[in-house]
Image (cartoon, rainbow, N blue to C red; front, side, top):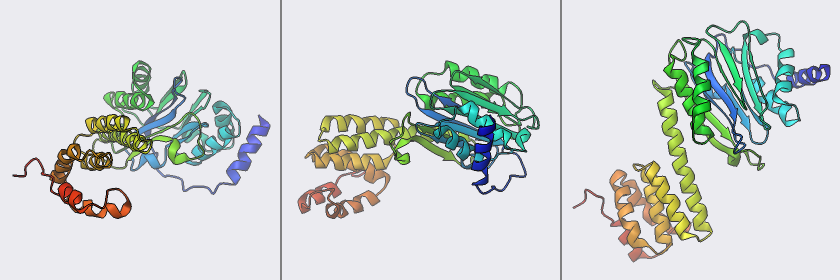
Length: 329
């Protein structure tokens, strides 16, 4: 234990001390590892601007951390550093707390890549405050409207179905249904990473979404999660095009449009991919719908041959630009 404390102290000394918030980043959050996929994540909501810039931390193949109350952001970085170096989540948290003279105002939870969990609610957290740990997850809350908040998160998470992002969202929604933050709502965030690292963090982040300031941040966060799922299908469709698997690409594009039917970006690029498959007839209705939502797409068409995204065929380009929007005569 002494060696862990000394190692943690050395890590702390290498990190510039952040400006301490003079008011608590009071919040409710959940950290979890999905035993089926190995994904790890954090989801959080607070009556505090941009809570996603402070509370959630996660790294593929390493772990996830939520740091809140009188939040010390270095718990996120140093917790991940310690877990990456081979410490379990409980070991990492014990070391950080031992080196922190202000630990009684902290609330922190961690889960590592093996699903080991640790949480701490300091005695000086503003009530109602508490946490509950379960199999590969922890829920925690402070400055809540009632002490029913975090037990409701437990029940929601354990009974939820779907992938990790969906289960995290349901836990947040259950907290809000019990009153949530006593001050109200302002911001929310979700961060989900892959089970193992590719060495490319931008690939490893399955979801990395923040609602900085909103009268209904959880509703907006759920909308963004659905939109990101749609773009994930679009990306899978593009990858299928590169593999020259046209049918797989069209399935992915259709799935994307089903999730985000009003998104003109998806309509347009789906159409352009169809043209590249020599299926211009199928592309025209999609282009017409995209033009109806945003006439700028029509102007973009002749710019694409120079980028290699359409053939340099004047007749084809004219035909594509002439596609009729649904309201066109």
